[in-house]
Length: 228
Image (cartoon, rainbow, N blue to C red):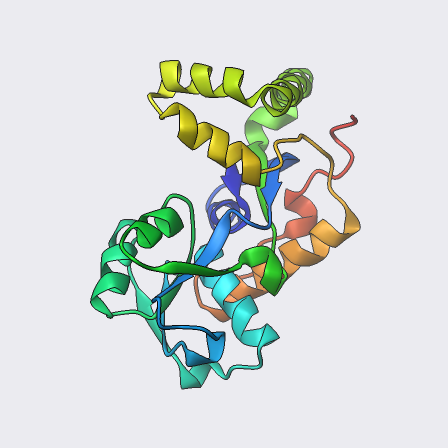
C-alpha cells in the first residue's frame, strides 16, 4: 500500500500495477500554521516534503488562492522536523499527514485547512509489480477481497481494530481510533475523477523535476480489476 506520488515515482524504475483504492481522506493531510496566521495569504514560508502529497497539496493551495509561487519560499525537510521548525518560526506553515499536524498543535500551532479544502483527497493504493501480477491474478483478487473484508471490519468496529493494531504494530489504541475517524477505509475501483487527479499528480511531478518523464497513469491503474 502506498499513496499516489510515491508509486508514480517508483513506476518509472520498475513496472508496477495499481489494483484498487483501499483508503482515502480529504482531512488526514492538514495545513498546520503558526498561531498568529489567520489567512493563507499571510504565509510566506511553506514547509514541504518534495515530491509527496505535502508538496502537491501546497501547490493546490497556491492555485486555489491565486498565490504566485514566486511570492513564497519553500523550505524542504523531512516530516519529523517540521513541528520544531514551525515552533521556531523557520516556516510559517506546512501541509503534512498525521501525526505531524497533531505534533505541531502540541507545540502551540493550529490547523488552518485540510487538503480536501484545496481540492485533494489522497488515495491509498494497493500496488504490486507487473511481473508478479501477470502470473498471479487469482491471488491478487483474493488479497484484495481480504483487504475489503478487513476494511469493513475496522470501519464497523474501530475499537476492535485498534486493539489488534496495538497488539501487532504497537500503535497506541487511541491513535488508530483517531485515524479511522478521518480515513475512509474502503476498497473500491477507480472512477473517472480519480484518473483526472492522478494525471494531474503525474504532470506535477514532471513540472517539479521529481520525475524525468510522465508516469503512464493509464498503464499503471488497473481500472475494473476489482469488482465489489
